[in-house]
Image (tube, rainbow, N blue to C red; front, side):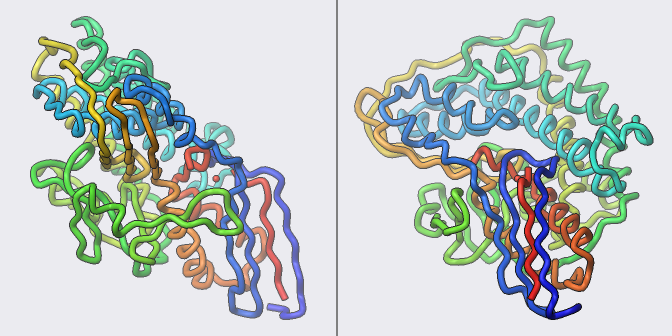
Length: 432
């Protein structure tokens, strides 16, 4: 590298990420002097917006936080409030919520794998360009995403910003015909999900493994979505109430998004973290199949996240078929709700990782104040640290275009949703 060389590279728009941000990298010789993932989207102030709103309105409002994983935000708030109100749902409503969660995982993972990540691994600028040579890949993605959307709409009324969920259950239960139609879609999608795992093993996945902490929910009886304890790879096992003691947000000068640290350290949430903590909780047939493909968890190679998402799609469809095989649901669609004052919190697993909500309510069930910490905020510091380690291993003597693509690939690998808490509008490298 020419140590006297200074380069400024500005990219006006880079696709395949949700949100707006920039990356600034300064290097001197073989040393990185500064690496900032700069988020400059205006704060959305959702927490302030919810103040004064009734518990009845919070789920529908929270759905607007994200159009890709709206249910995760709804259900985290709903379950926090249900705990405060002393509501215990009947088993059939618990299972229906899990079914809807599984649908959200399927549609979100299918979108990311096929339309956002696949072009990186196959050498294309976009899914549109990739479609000319690999139409079957995108067709598989659409088939899987359709099954996920159908599960979401079955119970939520629609797949984007669903309206069926409420504190105490659902607005109504689905009719038998729609139930059977969606069950057929799930059955038809299972072979595609299995082939997707096969396909990920054919990819040339880079390996820039290094030590980091991962965090997810962990359940004693099943793969976690809406229950369990908060478990970290460095030995913590916490209740939801323990979250605030160990996890802390802070503001950095180069970003409008908060950064979150675990006892002062960056950490990972998301599908790789979940599988690292919960691989043994997968059904035996899935574990056997994954092992046969030579895929190993836990691991610390972030590029295996695409395999983690594929496995979770297969698991979600497998579990959805199992739930739907029990037959069309009957019984009440919701339970009686009696609000009370107090503070409550809950965590769930969104497709991109663990979400934390805390609410203080008055005696009428109106929000006094709240805290919402999405997965992308929790991954911000981890993304920056991954970049610092991986870029040095990749080589600072690489061309600016190669470094740009490599950095974007790493960031896309996390599937960040910056509007919830990255499209790049600016990429700048300073060499001195």
